[in-house]
Image 1 (tube, rainbow, N blue to C red):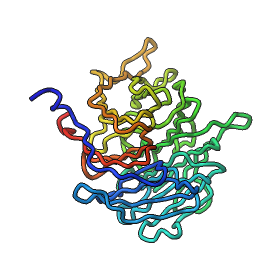
Image 2 (cartoon, rainbow, N blue to C red; image 1 turned 180 degrees about the vertical axis):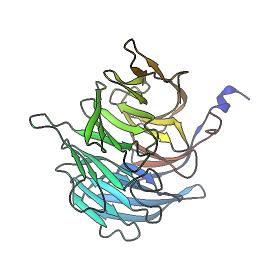
Image 3 (cartoon, rainbow, N blue to C red; image 1 turned 30 degrees about the horizontal axis):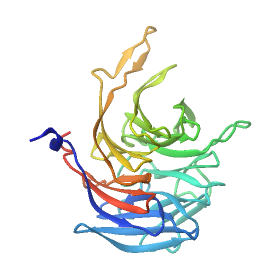
Image 4 (spheres, one colour; image 1 turned 90 degrees about the vertical axis):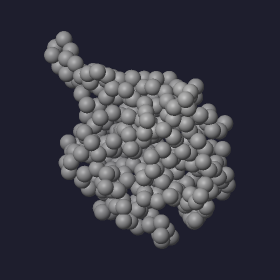
Length: 358
């Protein structure tokens, strides 16, 4: 067999043109359904529910809302309820029961400006501790919400008095391996990456990658911090080894320039944390595998532990569109199945083969 066929292949399985701009897509856990979230040309928000049925996409439901919807997550919901949390252009955080979506089951005016990014933890059987939702906004703040507590965030990370506010583009939970531990990572338009420790309510680490941070994600939310991937405007991604924090140098990292344009998102494969996909501004997808070094830490001249970065191998890439691929979500239930949306107003379901062999 030729080497080319042994590598994973990215196969377009089904696609659907849409009559609105789609910003985010999410699989509904334990189902063959997914959601598209976006904005109609008339300035209202839309949630569409699709089902994958023998190779075709069937629209099950369309819900229109007052404000365009930027992002969504099921991460803080139980598998029984499967409630969707969304952030919209008006700064509102809403939680929807998709069976009865007329009125949100939880709603709060979370931010003064658009919510760019959202993540959830403590639901779906992933991560220990309380269900929580984190939102990052153009108003420069990152807020953590407990859906059981009305109106007031349980944590609010905002610029100190006199500091200029930076547009927060991306947020992600991690380190939720027991009832107490939990961190939030946030990426900003000026290249800042900040790691907030929610247990001690402190800033644990910060770094600047010189370019706007489009997406951050831990390879797993529910384990001792292992790796953090971050993508940027210039088509670069960085992977930080989060196991060893040096007192002055922080975390070891590798960086790789893959796309010629903005790298919109990074998403780790749920069934294998060392495989991840990046989505590009020129309509391409790149599938990567992270290889660990022989030793993940070493001692510096002072005797302090410091991390050692691994390397990333490109497994496969494909160009699907002429427009940016703005979001991608792996199916949590079926390895290799993913859905992605692009600014050509199309949603595509892809199958990635041979992921058990890499």
